[in-house]
Image (cartoon, rainbow, N blue to C red; front, side, top):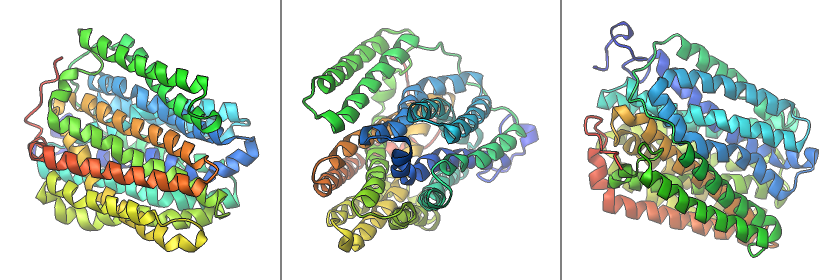
Length: 472
Protein backbone atom coordinates (compact mmCIF):
# COMPACT_ATOMS: atom_id res chain seq x y z
CA UNK A 1 0.00 0.00 0.00
CA UNK A 2 1.32 3.40 -0.94
CA UNK A 3 0.73 6.62 0.90
CA UNK A 4 -1.91 7.73 -1.58
CA UNK A 5 -3.99 4.54 -1.88
CA UNK A 6 -7.70 5.18 -1.52
CA UNK A 7 -9.82 3.64 1.21
CA UNK A 8 -12.09 1.89 -1.26
CA UNK A 9 -9.30 -0.27 -2.62
CA UNK A 10 -8.01 -1.52 0.71
CA UNK A 11 -9.62 -2.88 3.90
CA UNK A 12 -7.82 -0.39 6.10
CA UNK A 13 -8.49 3.02 7.54
CA UNK A 14 -6.34 5.00 5.13
CA UNK A 15 -2.86 5.34 3.74
CA UNK A 16 -1.80 8.74 5.03
CA UNK A 17 -1.07 10.33 8.37
CA UNK A 18 -3.96 12.77 7.83
CA UNK A 19 -6.74 10.36 6.83
CA UNK A 20 -10.13 10.37 8.56
CA UNK A 21 -9.27 7.30 10.60
CA UNK A 22 -5.92 8.79 11.58
CA UNK A 23 -7.66 11.77 13.15
CA UNK A 24 -9.74 9.37 15.23
CA UNK A 25 -6.47 7.80 16.42
CA UNK A 26 -5.10 11.18 17.45
CA UNK A 27 -8.30 12.00 19.35
CA UNK A 28 -7.99 8.68 21.18
CA UNK A 29 -4.46 9.60 22.24
CA UNK A 30 -5.62 13.05 23.35
CA UNK A 31 -8.34 11.57 25.55
CA UNK A 32 -6.10 9.05 27.33
CA UNK A 33 -3.42 11.69 27.95
CA UNK A 34 -5.77 14.55 28.82
CA UNK A 35 -7.47 12.49 31.52
CA UNK A 36 -4.31 12.22 33.60
CA UNK A 37 -2.80 15.65 32.93
CA UNK A 38 -6.02 17.49 33.84
CA UNK A 39 -6.78 15.31 36.87
CA UNK A 40 -3.41 15.94 38.54
CA UNK A 41 -4.34 19.56 39.22
CA UNK A 42 -7.73 18.55 40.67
CA UNK A 43 -6.34 16.05 43.20
CA UNK A 44 -5.98 18.38 46.22
CA UNK A 45 -9.57 19.60 45.72
CA UNK A 46 -10.78 16.00 45.45
CA UNK A 47 -8.95 15.29 48.69
CA UNK A 48 -10.73 18.16 50.43
CA UNK A 49 -14.19 17.39 49.08
CA UNK A 50 -14.12 13.61 49.55
CA UNK A 51 -11.84 13.38 52.58
CA UNK A 52 -8.99 11.59 50.82
CA UNK A 53 -5.60 11.03 52.46
CA UNK A 54 -2.32 11.20 50.55
CA UNK A 55 -2.48 7.47 49.81
CA UNK A 56 -6.14 7.88 48.84
CA UNK A 57 -5.18 10.42 46.19
CA UNK A 58 -2.54 8.03 44.87
CA UNK A 59 -5.26 5.39 44.55
CA UNK A 60 -7.43 7.80 42.56
CA UNK A 61 -4.61 7.80 39.99
CA UNK A 62 -3.34 4.24 40.30
CA UNK A 63 -6.83 2.69 40.36
CA UNK A 64 -6.83 3.79 36.73
CA UNK A 65 -3.20 2.98 35.96
CA UNK A 66 -3.16 -0.54 37.42
CA UNK A 67 -5.87 -2.11 35.22
CA UNK A 68 -4.50 -0.11 32.31
CA UNK A 69 -1.06 -1.62 32.78
CA UNK A 70 -2.35 -5.09 33.62
CA UNK A 71 -4.76 -5.50 30.70
CA UNK A 72 -2.79 -3.88 27.88
CA UNK A 73 -1.23 -7.21 26.90
CA UNK A 74 -4.45 -9.15 26.55
CA UNK A 75 -6.03 -6.13 24.85
CA UNK A 76 -3.32 -6.17 22.21
CA UNK A 77 -4.01 -9.84 21.51
CA UNK A 78 -7.78 -9.22 21.34
CA UNK A 79 -7.18 -6.36 18.94
CA UNK A 80 -5.10 -8.58 16.66
CA UNK A 81 -7.89 -11.19 16.68
CA UNK A 82 -11.02 -9.06 16.37
CA UNK A 83 -9.65 -6.09 14.45
CA UNK A 84 -8.11 -2.96 15.85
CA UNK A 85 -11.02 -0.75 14.84
CA UNK A 86 -13.60 -2.93 16.62
CA UNK A 87 -11.69 -2.85 19.90
CA UNK A 88 -11.00 0.87 19.52
CA UNK A 89 -14.73 1.63 19.19
CA UNK A 90 -15.80 -0.58 22.11
CA UNK A 91 -13.06 0.75 24.39
CA UNK A 92 -13.64 4.40 23.50
CA UNK A 93 -17.37 4.09 24.18
CA UNK A 94 -16.79 2.40 27.53
CA UNK A 95 -14.18 4.98 28.47
CA UNK A 96 -16.63 7.80 27.80
CA UNK A 97 -19.34 6.23 29.96
CA UNK A 98 -16.84 5.58 32.78
CA UNK A 99 -15.76 9.23 32.61
CA UNK A 100 -19.36 10.30 33.14
CA UNK A 101 -19.61 7.95 36.13
CA UNK A 102 -16.42 9.44 37.62
CA UNK A 103 -17.84 12.94 37.21
CA UNK A 104 -20.95 11.92 39.14
CA UNK A 105 -19.23 9.85 41.88
CA UNK A 106 -20.48 10.97 45.34
CA UNK A 107 -17.79 9.25 47.46
CA UNK A 108 -14.10 8.40 47.29
CA UNK A 109 -14.61 4.60 47.13
CA UNK A 110 -17.01 4.99 44.21
CA UNK A 111 -14.66 7.39 42.44
CA UNK A 112 -11.82 4.88 42.79
CA UNK A 113 -14.10 2.11 41.51
CA UNK A 114 -15.15 4.08 38.43
CA UNK A 115 -11.53 5.07 37.83
CA UNK A 116 -10.66 1.37 37.75
CA UNK A 117 -13.40 0.76 35.17
CA UNK A 118 -12.06 3.70 33.18
CA UNK A 119 -8.63 2.06 33.27
CA UNK A 120 -10.04 -1.21 31.92
CA UNK A 121 -11.40 0.53 28.83
CA UNK A 122 -8.27 2.64 28.45
CA UNK A 123 -6.33 -0.63 28.27
CA UNK A 124 -8.28 -1.52 25.15
CA UNK A 125 -7.96 1.95 23.66
CA UNK A 126 -4.28 2.79 24.11
CA UNK A 127 -2.60 -0.15 22.31
CA UNK A 128 -4.96 0.29 19.38
CA UNK A 129 -3.64 3.83 18.86
CA UNK A 130 -0.19 2.66 17.76
CA UNK A 131 -1.48 -0.61 16.31
CA UNK A 132 -3.81 1.27 13.96
CA UNK A 133 -0.90 3.42 12.80
CA UNK A 134 1.14 0.34 11.89
CA UNK A 135 -1.79 -1.60 10.41
CA UNK A 136 -3.14 1.23 8.29
CA UNK A 137 -0.03 3.15 7.18
CA UNK A 138 2.71 0.99 5.68
CA UNK A 139 4.63 3.69 3.85
CA UNK A 140 7.66 4.34 6.15
CA UNK A 141 7.62 8.11 5.66
CA UNK A 142 3.88 8.41 6.30
CA UNK A 143 4.13 6.06 9.25
CA UNK A 144 6.87 8.19 10.81
CA UNK A 145 4.68 11.28 10.32
CA UNK A 146 1.73 9.51 11.94
CA UNK A 147 3.79 8.37 14.93
CA UNK A 148 4.99 11.95 15.39
CA UNK A 149 1.41 13.24 15.14
CA UNK A 150 0.45 10.77 17.88
CA UNK A 151 3.17 12.40 19.98
CA UNK A 152 1.87 15.85 18.97
CA UNK A 153 -1.63 14.81 20.06
CA UNK A 154 -0.31 13.64 23.40
CA UNK A 155 1.71 16.84 23.73
CA UNK A 156 -1.33 19.00 23.06
CA UNK A 157 -3.26 17.10 25.70
CA UNK A 158 -0.40 17.41 28.18
CA UNK A 159 -0.21 21.15 27.52
CA UNK A 160 -3.96 21.74 27.71
CA UNK A 161 -4.49 19.42 30.68
CA UNK A 162 -2.89 21.49 33.45
CA UNK A 163 -4.47 24.73 32.22
CA UNK A 164 -7.92 23.26 31.65
CA UNK A 165 -7.76 21.13 34.78
CA UNK A 166 -6.69 24.07 36.92
CA UNK A 167 -9.16 26.50 35.36
CA UNK A 168 -12.11 24.11 35.57
CA UNK A 169 -11.26 23.02 39.12
CA UNK A 170 -11.02 26.61 40.37
CA UNK A 171 -14.13 27.83 38.54
CA UNK A 172 -16.51 24.83 38.34
CA UNK A 173 -15.07 22.06 40.48
CA UNK A 174 -13.00 18.89 40.13
CA UNK A 175 -15.81 16.95 38.46
CA UNK A 176 -15.35 19.06 35.33
CA UNK A 177 -11.96 17.37 34.79
CA UNK A 178 -13.85 14.17 33.92
CA UNK A 179 -16.48 15.84 31.74
CA UNK A 180 -13.60 17.27 29.74
CA UNK A 181 -12.89 13.99 27.92
CA UNK A 182 -16.46 13.11 26.93
CA UNK A 183 -16.72 15.26 23.77
CA UNK A 184 -13.40 14.24 22.15
CA UNK A 185 -13.99 10.53 22.82
CA UNK A 186 -17.44 10.80 21.19
CA UNK A 187 -15.87 12.49 18.16
CA UNK A 188 -13.24 9.73 17.91
CA UNK A 189 -15.97 7.05 17.88
CA UNK A 190 -17.92 8.83 15.15
CA UNK A 191 -14.84 9.22 12.97
CA UNK A 192 -13.61 5.65 13.32
CA UNK A 193 -17.10 4.21 12.72
CA UNK A 194 -17.06 5.76 9.24
CA UNK A 195 -13.95 3.80 8.24
CA UNK A 196 -13.54 0.11 7.28
CA UNK A 197 -12.22 -2.51 9.68
CA UNK A 198 -8.50 -3.23 9.70
CA UNK A 199 -6.99 -6.58 8.75
CA UNK A 200 -6.81 -9.18 11.52
CA UNK A 201 -3.71 -10.91 12.77
CA UNK A 202 -3.33 -14.49 13.91
CA UNK A 203 -5.96 -15.86 16.31
CA UNK A 204 -4.29 -16.54 19.66
CA UNK A 205 -5.97 -17.91 22.76
CA UNK A 206 -6.21 -15.69 25.82
CA UNK A 207 -3.62 -16.70 28.43
CA UNK A 208 -5.83 -16.48 31.53
CA UNK A 209 -3.29 -17.95 34.04
CA UNK A 210 -0.63 -15.54 32.83
CA UNK A 211 -3.08 -12.61 32.88
CA UNK A 212 -4.14 -13.41 36.46
CA UNK A 213 -0.58 -13.89 37.73
CA UNK A 214 0.66 -10.73 36.06
CA UNK A 215 -2.23 -8.62 37.34
CA UNK A 216 -1.89 -9.85 40.93
CA UNK A 217 1.88 -9.36 40.91
CA UNK A 218 1.67 -5.83 39.58
CA UNK A 219 -1.16 -4.88 41.96
CA UNK A 220 0.75 -6.20 44.97
CA UNK A 221 3.93 -4.31 44.06
CA UNK A 222 2.19 -0.99 43.44
CA UNK A 223 -0.06 -1.38 46.51
CA UNK A 224 3.04 -1.97 48.64
CA UNK A 225 4.68 1.22 47.39
CA UNK A 226 1.50 3.28 47.78
CA UNK A 227 0.90 2.11 51.35
CA UNK A 228 4.55 2.77 52.22
CA UNK A 229 3.75 6.49 52.00
CA UNK A 230 1.31 6.11 54.91
CA UNK A 231 2.79 3.41 57.16
CA UNK A 232 6.47 3.27 56.19
CA UNK A 233 8.57 0.89 54.15
CA UNK A 234 9.23 -1.49 57.05
CA UNK A 235 5.57 -2.01 57.99
CA UNK A 236 4.53 -5.69 57.85
CA UNK A 237 1.75 -5.03 55.33
CA UNK A 238 4.15 -3.23 53.00
CA UNK A 239 6.78 -5.97 53.20
CA UNK A 240 4.12 -8.64 52.64
CA UNK A 241 2.74 -6.86 49.56
CA UNK A 242 6.19 -6.30 48.04
CA UNK A 243 7.20 -9.92 48.69
CA UNK A 244 3.95 -11.12 47.14
CA UNK A 245 4.64 -8.99 44.08
CA UNK A 246 8.13 -10.40 43.61
CA UNK A 247 6.86 -13.97 43.99
CA UNK A 248 4.04 -13.19 41.58
CA UNK A 249 6.52 -11.99 38.94
CA UNK A 250 8.46 -15.24 39.26
CA UNK A 251 5.24 -17.24 38.90
CA UNK A 252 4.23 -15.14 35.88
CA UNK A 253 7.55 -15.79 34.12
CA UNK A 254 7.27 -19.53 34.79
CA UNK A 255 3.70 -19.62 33.45
CA UNK A 256 4.69 -17.74 30.31
CA UNK A 257 7.69 -20.01 29.75
CA UNK A 258 5.54 -23.15 29.92
CA UNK A 259 2.42 -21.88 28.12
CA UNK A 260 1.78 -23.04 24.55
CA UNK A 261 0.33 -19.62 23.68
CA UNK A 262 1.68 -17.20 26.30
CA UNK A 263 0.32 -13.72 26.83
CA UNK A 264 3.89 -12.43 26.52
CA UNK A 265 5.93 -14.57 24.10
CA UNK A 266 9.32 -14.36 25.80
CA UNK A 267 11.02 -14.65 22.42
CA UNK A 268 9.86 -11.10 21.77
CA UNK A 269 12.54 -9.90 24.18
CA UNK A 270 15.29 -11.62 22.20
CA UNK A 271 15.14 -8.59 19.98
CA UNK A 272 17.47 -6.20 21.76
CA UNK A 273 15.88 -3.14 20.19
CA UNK A 274 12.45 -4.07 21.52
CA UNK A 275 13.80 -4.87 24.99
CA UNK A 276 15.71 -1.60 25.13
CA UNK A 277 12.69 0.38 23.92
CA UNK A 278 10.43 -1.26 26.53
CA UNK A 279 12.88 -0.49 29.34
CA UNK A 280 13.24 3.02 27.97
CA UNK A 281 9.44 3.38 27.95
CA UNK A 282 9.36 2.41 31.64
CA UNK A 283 11.99 5.03 32.47
CA UNK A 284 10.27 7.67 30.34
CA UNK A 285 6.84 7.26 31.91
CA UNK A 286 8.27 7.04 35.44
CA UNK A 287 10.16 10.29 35.02
CA UNK A 288 7.86 12.40 32.87
CA UNK A 289 4.46 11.56 34.33
CA UNK A 290 5.34 10.41 37.83
CA UNK A 291 7.13 13.69 38.37
CA UNK A 292 4.26 15.83 37.03
CA UNK A 293 1.92 14.11 39.49
CA UNK A 294 4.22 14.89 42.41
CA UNK A 295 4.90 18.48 41.34
CA UNK A 296 1.16 19.17 40.97
CA UNK A 297 0.67 18.19 44.62
CA UNK A 298 3.86 19.90 45.81
CA UNK A 299 3.02 23.27 44.25
CA UNK A 300 -0.45 23.36 45.77
CA UNK A 301 0.46 21.95 49.18
CA UNK A 302 3.89 23.51 49.76
CA UNK A 303 3.70 26.70 47.67
CA UNK A 304 -0.02 27.28 48.43
CA UNK A 305 -0.83 27.85 44.75
CA UNK A 306 -4.31 27.47 43.32
CA UNK A 307 -4.96 24.70 40.81
CA UNK A 308 -4.76 27.16 37.92
CA UNK A 309 -1.55 28.76 39.22
CA UNK A 310 0.06 25.34 39.59
CA UNK A 311 -1.02 24.48 36.05
CA UNK A 312 0.65 27.64 34.74
CA UNK A 313 3.89 26.81 36.57
CA UNK A 314 3.91 23.31 35.05
CA UNK A 315 3.05 24.44 31.52
CA UNK A 316 6.72 24.71 30.35
CA UNK A 317 6.95 20.91 30.35
CA UNK A 318 3.94 20.67 28.09
CA UNK A 319 5.02 23.50 25.81
CA UNK A 320 8.47 21.94 25.53
CA UNK A 321 6.93 18.65 24.41
CA UNK A 322 4.84 20.43 21.78
CA UNK A 323 7.82 22.48 20.56
CA UNK A 324 9.75 19.26 20.05
CA UNK A 325 6.92 17.39 18.35
CA UNK A 326 5.77 20.23 16.08
CA UNK A 327 8.87 22.34 15.51
CA UNK A 328 11.85 20.00 15.84
CA UNK A 329 10.83 16.42 15.10
CA UNK A 330 9.62 16.99 11.51
CA UNK A 331 13.16 18.21 10.75
CA UNK A 332 14.86 15.38 12.64
CA UNK A 333 12.80 12.26 11.85
CA UNK A 334 14.83 11.47 8.73
CA UNK A 335 17.94 11.12 10.91
CA UNK A 336 16.53 7.93 12.43
CA UNK A 337 15.62 6.84 15.97
CA UNK A 338 19.21 6.62 17.20
CA UNK A 339 19.83 10.29 16.50
CA UNK A 340 16.49 11.27 18.06
CA UNK A 341 17.27 9.34 21.24
CA UNK A 342 20.80 10.74 21.48
CA UNK A 343 19.47 14.27 20.96
CA UNK A 344 16.61 14.07 23.46
CA UNK A 345 17.91 12.19 26.48
CA UNK A 346 20.76 14.59 27.39
CA UNK A 347 18.21 17.42 27.57
CA UNK A 348 16.14 15.39 30.02
CA UNK A 349 19.16 14.72 32.21
CA UNK A 350 20.23 18.39 32.25
CA UNK A 351 16.65 19.54 32.85
CA UNK A 352 16.19 17.21 35.83
CA UNK A 353 19.50 18.37 37.33
CA UNK A 354 18.53 22.04 36.92
CA UNK A 355 15.19 21.40 38.59
CA UNK A 356 17.07 20.12 41.65
CA UNK A 357 17.36 23.80 42.58
CA UNK A 358 13.64 23.90 43.33
CA UNK A 359 12.81 24.75 46.95
CA UNK A 360 10.47 27.60 47.96
CA UNK A 361 8.53 29.96 45.70
CA UNK A 362 11.66 32.04 45.11
CA UNK A 363 13.16 29.20 43.07
CA UNK A 364 10.41 29.10 40.45
CA UNK A 365 12.89 29.93 37.66
CA UNK A 366 14.80 26.70 38.29
CA UNK A 367 11.58 24.72 38.06
CA UNK A 368 10.40 26.39 34.86
CA UNK A 369 13.72 26.12 32.98
CA UNK A 370 14.38 22.55 34.09
CA UNK A 371 10.84 21.38 33.39
CA UNK A 372 10.94 22.97 29.92
CA UNK A 373 14.14 21.09 29.06
CA UNK A 374 12.65 17.82 30.29
CA UNK A 375 9.60 18.46 28.10
CA UNK A 376 11.69 19.20 25.00
CA UNK A 377 13.89 16.16 25.56
CA UNK A 378 11.04 13.71 26.09
CA UNK A 379 9.18 15.20 23.12
CA UNK A 380 12.17 14.47 20.89
CA UNK A 381 12.94 10.90 21.92
CA UNK A 382 9.57 9.41 22.90
CA UNK A 383 8.27 9.01 19.29
CA UNK A 384 11.35 6.95 18.47
CA UNK A 385 10.72 4.63 21.41
CA UNK A 386 7.14 4.18 20.19
CA UNK A 387 8.18 3.45 16.62
CA UNK A 388 10.98 1.02 17.49
CA UNK A 389 8.88 -0.96 19.96
CA UNK A 390 5.82 -1.32 17.72
CA UNK A 391 7.52 -1.90 14.37
CA UNK A 392 10.04 -4.41 15.70
CA UNK A 393 7.43 -7.19 15.88
CA UNK A 394 6.00 -6.67 12.39
CA UNK A 395 2.49 -5.81 11.25
CA UNK A 396 0.86 -9.12 12.25
CA UNK A 397 1.81 -8.66 15.91
CA UNK A 398 1.63 -4.90 16.09
CA UNK A 399 -1.13 -5.08 18.70
CA UNK A 400 0.85 -7.45 20.92
CA UNK A 401 4.07 -5.44 20.63
CA UNK A 402 2.19 -2.22 21.33
CA UNK A 403 0.57 -3.85 24.36
CA UNK A 404 3.89 -5.03 25.82
CA UNK A 405 5.55 -1.67 25.21
CA UNK A 406 2.68 0.35 26.65
CA UNK A 407 2.49 -2.03 29.62
CA UNK A 408 6.10 -1.20 30.45
CA UNK A 409 5.24 2.50 30.17
CA UNK A 410 2.18 2.27 32.40
CA UNK A 411 4.07 0.18 34.96
CA UNK A 412 6.66 2.96 34.93
CA UNK A 413 3.95 5.56 35.55
CA UNK A 414 2.31 3.58 38.35
CA UNK A 415 5.70 2.93 39.94
CA UNK A 416 6.69 6.57 39.59
CA UNK A 417 3.49 7.82 41.22
CA UNK A 418 3.77 5.30 44.06
CA UNK A 419 7.49 5.77 44.72
CA UNK A 420 7.68 9.53 44.20
CA UNK A 421 4.43 9.91 46.12
CA UNK A 422 6.06 8.23 49.12
CA UNK A 423 8.97 10.69 48.86
CA UNK A 424 6.75 13.79 48.88
CA UNK A 425 5.00 12.37 51.96
CA UNK A 426 8.27 12.69 53.92
CA UNK A 427 8.38 15.34 56.68
CA UNK A 428 10.70 17.38 54.45
CA UNK A 429 8.77 17.30 51.18
CA UNK A 430 11.34 19.50 49.41
CA UNK A 431 14.07 16.94 50.01
CA UNK A 432 11.69 14.23 48.85
CA UNK A 433 11.04 16.04 45.57
CA UNK A 434 14.78 16.52 45.06
CA UNK A 435 15.43 12.82 45.58
CA UNK A 436 12.74 12.14 42.99
CA UNK A 437 14.38 14.52 40.54
CA UNK A 438 17.73 12.79 41.05
CA UNK A 439 16.08 9.44 40.29
CA UNK A 440 14.58 10.90 37.11
CA UNK A 441 18.01 12.16 36.01
CA UNK A 442 19.46 8.66 36.56
CA UNK A 443 16.67 7.12 34.50
CA UNK A 444 17.44 9.57 31.71
CA UNK A 445 21.03 8.40 31.85
CA UNK A 446 19.78 4.80 31.59
CA UNK A 447 17.91 5.62 28.38
CA UNK A 448 21.07 7.26 27.02
CA UNK A 449 23.15 4.16 27.76
CA UNK A 450 20.55 1.89 26.16
CA UNK A 451 20.63 4.10 23.08
CA UNK A 452 24.41 3.98 22.76
CA UNK A 453 24.48 0.19 23.17
CA UNK A 454 21.38 -0.91 21.25
CA UNK A 455 20.26 1.89 18.94
CA UNK A 456 22.26 0.67 15.90
CA UNK A 457 20.02 -2.40 15.92
CA UNK A 458 16.97 -0.21 16.62
CA UNK A 459 17.44 1.76 13.41
CA UNK A 460 16.70 -1.30 11.34
CA UNK A 461 13.57 -2.23 13.26
CA UNK A 462 11.58 0.68 11.96
CA UNK A 463 10.95 -1.33 8.78
CA UNK A 464 7.73 -3.30 9.22
CA UNK A 465 8.89 -5.86 6.68
CA UNK A 466 11.45 -7.28 9.11
CA UNK A 467 9.45 -8.86 11.94
CA UNK A 468 11.18 -10.41 14.92
CA UNK A 469 10.44 -13.97 15.94
CA UNK A 470 8.17 -13.98 18.99
CA UNK A 471 8.08 -17.68 19.68
CA UNK A 472 9.10 -18.71 23.22
